[in-house]
Image (cartoon, rainbow, N blue to C red; front, top):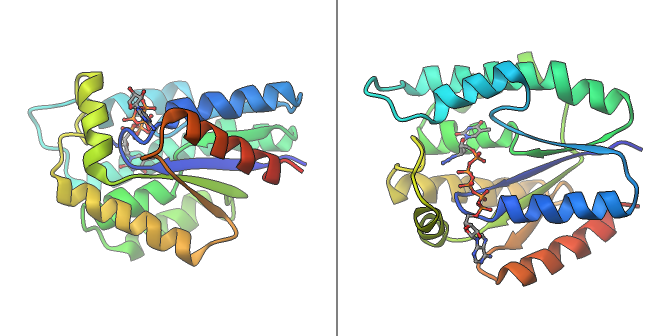
Length: 205
Ligand code: Z5A
């Protein structure tokens, strides 16, 4: 049966490595799937991604940011996620709607009720079967991202912003233990990979 899996976490949590591990596993098991991401995933949604991540002289207001994330998500759901699930493919998405509550809600301080309204309207009852939360203190992830190179518009936020994001994700994982699995990404990449494999063997039944 098709599964919808999302990967969440802070900056530099190692999502790229984890996604490669998942892709290799699904290929080995001959499970048909797509790997996709938010913001992005379709041609127009990727254009919105550029607007969201580019540094700009004009301040992108929190409300506009939230609406752009949902505009990108709506394109992504209707043109990519739902059609794939309807064809019984597994869908693995690098971030999904939890990120809006974490970043725009907890991070930027926008009212959860407004985000909930957009979720009910545009996401409806589409819900990930499993969510992998890659967790580490933000200082560690940010150091990794800085070592990698240029920072995007969101990565230049202050550490308090990322602490609020992390705290939100951990609370949500605590509330939804059946959906969430947390992996500590302070561990080496090899250990993270091993833990992802163990989790995959458990869910891919
Ligand atoms: N966002 C939002 O605000 N609201 C929303 O609704 C959505 C998203 C959907 C873009 O997302 C931004 O949009 C993101 C959230 C926000 N905020 N920011 N900033 P994104 O997912 O495309 O970008 P990202 O979260 O910034 O991804 P990233 O920085 O590329 O992180 P990553 O993919 O998790 O990291 P990585 O490239 O795999 O690893 C970074 C480096 O660390 C790399 O050199 C690795 O080799 C190294 N690394 C990773 N793990 C380890 C371990 N365990 N040991 C040693 N080294 C490691």
